[in-house]
Length: 222
Length: 222
DNA sequence: TCAAATATAGGACTCTGGTCCTATTTTGTT
DNA sequence: AACAAAATAGGACCAGAGTCCTATATTTGA
Image 1 (cartoon, each protein chain N blue to C red):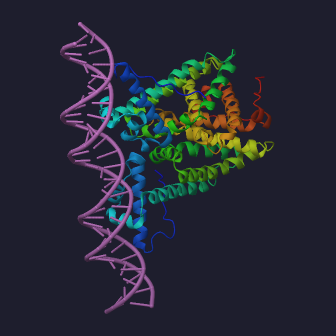
Image 2 (tube, rainbow over the protein chains, first blue to last red):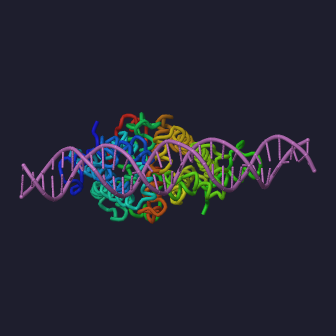
Image 3 (cartoon, rainbow over the protein chains, first blue to last red):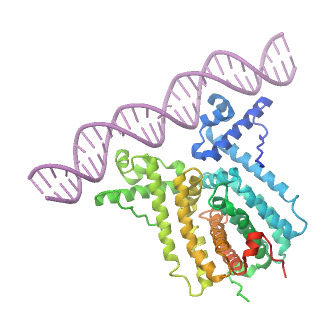
């Protein structure tokens, strides 16, 4: 299974030894966050998981907030990097590309790391400004490709409407996480739900117009 | 603004004094959960917020886990009670009822309590069996009314497909929380997003069929 | 090879938080 | 009024966690 690849941000550790350490630390922190939530993330456990002492951990991160921020930055950067690759191996037609992305995202939220990490991020973002800011950056990036495809599939849509549609589609998929995610009650229905999502979103993008969005006029059944 | 009404479950406190206390305790716990997350919920703060001593709090809840569970039970019970009222003041036609419920839920997730409480619940459910179980009960209940309406609007759908469609719709709306919720980046676009959701879900329910869901055949554009 | 920078362990220190105990007051019942 | 049950405060206890300090070891570049 594909796994998020963390990368040390430049300037943290000088020697290669230090680089490895930081990576180990972040990996350990991520593991703890995924397995037990932020609640379970203590500096002693992080150090232990990284195979170093608390004192040494303190050398790299002088306080817990710094570590948390670097963890969020790093994990989110890894997800952003993934999005850059999605579009390449999509299909030829716009519809195919669109559907491929939807399927990719919904498949991804079936992994343990995504299923467990993101709810923590959403909860953190409610009380931590930095988390909120990073989260916004992540989803802004995630919507970029959706935005382009919506624009191509429905050129008449205003920029505002288009961005709202992209937001709806993105948020809608995220919402599936606690339901069809790793070991969640509907995990076995993930593929069917993915079909529903692809179908529904494609229909939406094809048929929506500014009027319906901005003033709420529902098109009557023919 | 409407606010979730907590109710003491029977058998907790004997005298009326005790009943009031439990209510104050739960309210204090909920306030802390909403303002600072589970991370910020300490027994001392709960006691202080309820205007009692830690010793006294310990008399009502002998450990933190008991308090957390009762809090989840109580808050979730309050949300479930709300769902029972939704359907009454909906419109006449099935479409109207359906759209009314979608709008109600999306409006509700604009409140501070819903915006902040639910991500905590989703995160807790990843690591607490009881939280997961209560969460499941809540959403099962929330889907009941959606299920009925989907069945009426699209009678040809199999039970399996119908439940998957209801799940998709419900989860999709929940996913909007971290984006259009209270003081979130897209809070001002909540109404437009609500329009998109209503439109999109109605289209989905009207046009979907078993074949498309179970085998992923997308209906080509005419 | 040697010095400076870097990395590391171990422990101490303090604060917080969950839990528990006991003595006292309040409440409801007979 | 008297008694038992319920409610309450205060404090003690202990484990855990974040932070900090210092002495040593290791690595790198000159």
